[in-house]
Length: 629
Image 1 (cartoon, rainbow, N blue to C red):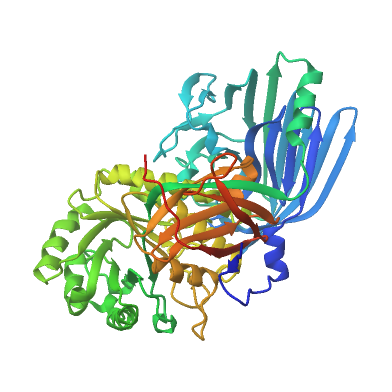
Image 2: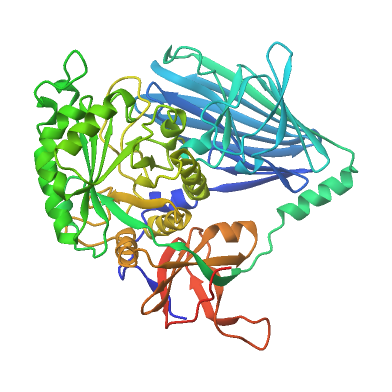
């Protein structure tokens, strides 16, 4: 079976990219407990072989909720009669912040005690400093008891659908049971609360310190110190020997190459319409047949806003005409439409500036520059103005920011829009590769929740970007330029994009927009050469609305999460796009439908070998595909 990489010249990863994709991992094992110290994060905390917490880590947020980069300075691990002791020092630096922290974890047969002590190297303004506990998304639906700071308690449950607001407040401790073991997680040093981070496509519920009801940001002086701790206790009726044996079995590594078997089934969906954001130089992008749209984001300059919030004679929109002209010219090259996203306090007034381009636009959305959502009190005036100007495309409402804003403002979102929209970035809270990868199934969940809010209307997802395009929660008012991720031109990003497209292949998701046309946040370079993500988008755009086949993967949890197979039935035959989001090679036995073997009824045409962090395509001649059940 011939696996063809998406591009012939795969970029050589830099040392920093390699370190990011493969951070140092130290496995900690003590009695019934196992955990992994991954960089600065104590992750995959398990008891008797069963996952208890996704992670515990320290965070420092500046006044705009940005996270200075953590760097581990030292690690000490020792074991004695009292248990296993781990101690690591971390420096947080960036955005004008320097902060030093010492963390420790002490494992005993019945407890895991994690402490944090942090000190500011100099003065800065902060929204949060301290420990956070990440609970796995698999906890959705789990019953839990919340003990409050006054000694009272509340019976609660981790939400199944994404909760727009904090499900648990005023937390002193959390108690729950799993597989015959009772757990208690208690907090000291501050009052904690829990938010549903799936709103931002993080794969976690997060219990954090310093309630959001308190004023922020706060001034932090040089030398100010924060001390916090969390204590995880486990109580079980199982004999200690049996519990420890289960822990050893659960932590075992089978070794050898990763091998999975994938059965290709019947129709499961259609390739969605794919679009790309114009960026600053959309003309550099080579022609992409089948591209749905060029999205152009028009942001009103705040200097043009008058005292009532309306724009003074369009002065804040002086650059819009050039942006639209450039995007429209690029769209014509691809045979695509325009997807206009206008950020303005005066949407009705802005229509006149956009009128010459409305005939070429297939979608039009407006958002307020302060709230980043479609404001209902401006909607009807905008709708009347744009229809009077001759626009006949789809009027889209929602948010230019995260699903969070759509979820929290769903009751205010205009109900008579033609469609809804929200954007995705996997790095609102964490920049580690593991968190970027784990966001993929959360994208699917967010899209399903958005479709529920849409009530039958289609949903347009995007832009989908590695890093945020802007800071939707900044308190300083500074409009920093969007950052670029060093992973953008790597095969990793193509594999992640393929997994994202697969996750968002849902009935009702009408289009998905990815990245920018060119540049450091784009899918092509200054010479017009497509990077791996760009080549993937080009090949899939040409297969728009083609049948996507179901895939049933036989593998362990880690292997199944690492591999993406996206089989598309094209007129020329079956095309299987494949990606590997792991640092290990994976062998995939692909079993196609339509032929019968002497054994189990499937035929394996061969073994597909996927290298680490890779994406590519395999093509087969036409096969008979069974009708869906």
